[in-house]
Length: 347
Image (cartoon, rainbow, N blue to C red; front, top):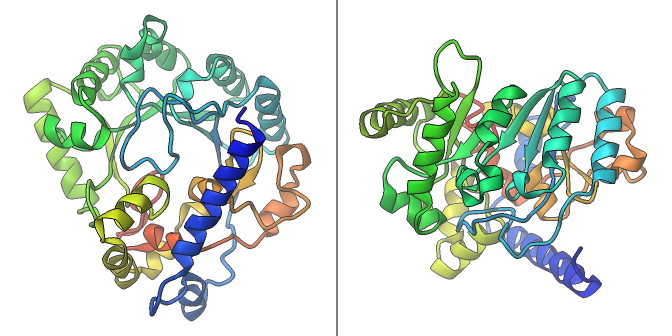
């Protein structure tokens, strides 16, 4: 666990980012935008996805990472907190999917135990694997077989199907290792028709622009990865970069912040706003606190239920009746076709 001084620094940084987001000049406040279309306060519609960040430690330091994950991060979910997650899942059958994320979640020493225990509860499991972790150390080489055994859906970032664009965003050598990892996943059946083993890829724009059509880019990815590397996968998720953490730093340093926010605001889509992921998801941080989404988690914007902001005091009724906490970064989820951890949310 980080020192108290370091934790105060992180909280101060989150507060600073919120201040930057709220200083919009003539840009309308997101809550006002929702008010105009009859969606404020934004309310949950279900409790289906239980997304758990089990640690910020990662073998990579990606430029666009909103988690600010890196090899030197020490925040790791304990088995005790994982047990609290399992207790909530047992007591709330409406949660049908558990989305395990990080950092590189596989680096948590209790990762495999956690997946095995979730599987006993008959939940659908998603693991957000960065691919390169599979090759990072011999102890991870069997991950494709572990994923297959527990019928885990694998979701992995691949910024592009070429080396230069991928390595610029995620680091030198990442593309080559990602391709090898995808081939290892294919070898055990992932991404192949009829296997039931889902392998989904994620695209994030490398600059200050919105992603292209998800359907069109998926078709392009599938054709190029098959032709170049004989790789198969199921779906491509196109995700808009949120103006927080490292990406916000990039926008500010490059002088693109105001232009990018203008793009998000001008592309606001009511259909996307109606289907934002926070309406059917609860996000859990490595230390057990509760958020409406993992973006709010990075800004330390906890759920609005003051008496139920931690797993230890989880109140399902309060969660279902809460008002979702929104801020200016939420424009990223409602621009164009919308954006979620599962890609576009509106046609």
